[in-house]
Image 1 (cartoon, one colour):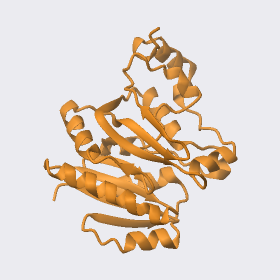
Image 2: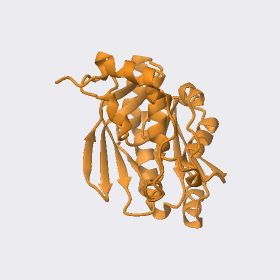
Image 3: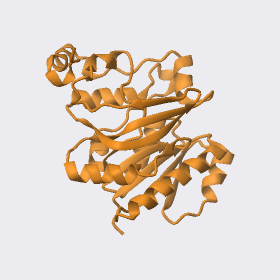
Length: 253
């Protein structure tokens, strides 16, 4: 069967939190399937603990594929999932986050209608647990987006996007082992994307739910180790200054 979307979930030590995640993914996939969108779910168990591994091994869903790896790196785990994906598009989730019911269907239909070599991101990211926030995200062509803020923080705070598999194969995540002094692999990935002129498009009226853990997250580990993002060509003086000058990357006062 031809697959339209491969959902890649990286799993580590989520334990029972993986259950609502998987249910939300299956619900979103089932809703998309009503419009003929076919999905598979790929779980990459990267140094997963016994509880997390046992949960996924007992799921037994026909569209679920499991791969155990010893990478210790979220970006590398996602790359592995992309390699195993059969779909035209790949959508990502971590094993403790949630998809909105309409996310996969809306993202696929929007991507097919536009036909761009780009990333499709949800309009809303709803953060919960440590912080309760609703973040409305912006297209890279949005005139109110100031690209200079990428020096300070990531304008797209998660990897809950859908993109063509070919784009991800050509633009893999870079490794960020904790002892390297580098981190924030998502932030770096978006920087590189923008430097290469690859757009980020917002899927209207779509959402995902992002768990900001109270403790034990990769982000907390990065902050604790005071890591920085890897050097990015986005901040090359020529590239950065030219992007700032362009109308699409300036704030409109």
